[in-house]
Image (cartoon, rainbow, N blue to C red; front, side, top):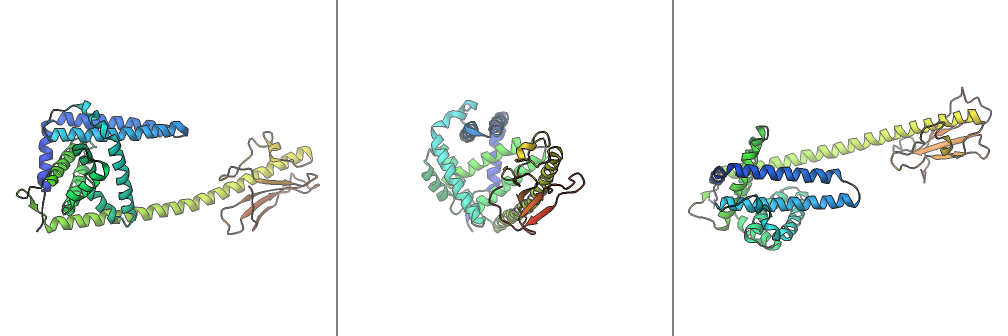
Length: 355
């Protein structure tokens, strides 16, 4: 039976290290969470132009700096070395390595999840210590990736089981109105550092056998993740499809209503001037406050009027082509009592090249 690190021992040691500096660690996570939320809020509020791009880049850079600093401080707490909040900025010289590694990891993991999810889970486990190796050993991105794959080899079932246990631990912490996370998050982080240090120098005498039960639990966890992901995917795709259909129908209804509004405004114009308007713009603002535009292209509807202004038609291209893809409202011929006779409505299977 394979020997690996003890999940129970890792969490116990994480808890022991947390108890030595609880208020410092809680303060660290509260402070960095507030900073992260503030910068994220600013980035979300500025969404257009160059300013939006710059704020998003700055927010991303700040998130990386915070992540690097937290990892560095956690290592010092685990090693029982004096540290303070100012150490958040100690590993700044590793910024570019951390950034490049993060991009590479994102690409690998996303591709893995695209390939039926399971490869993504395997990649996440195999590469889970890349950031630790950059901060602790100051390795480059490629070196950290290779070393993470090396030290996790043969321990990935146990690492998956360990990860699932930490997830459950933090879910339990979240149940107490989120306050429990102030304890479970740093304990989980310190426990992970203990596992990382064990994997660098495996203690065969202190290792434990990876039981069949832990493998079964890990397998069930993977199945739950895969099943849950597929369910979410089907719901999202179904929702998008349904939303697209509903939205298209709504837009076509809006188009018809717009054409009726234009028709009535043109009829009122005819009542006053004994001629239909030469252009739609003539109707605004006396006969209609604003000229309606197509809800997708925001272009004016196609309006044509006879040379002598005695009749007109205004048309829109519909998204639902069941009864034809062109809907039109027509004006009255000259001499018809426009106050009592309604305009005609038609749907034709005609291709419209311009709205």
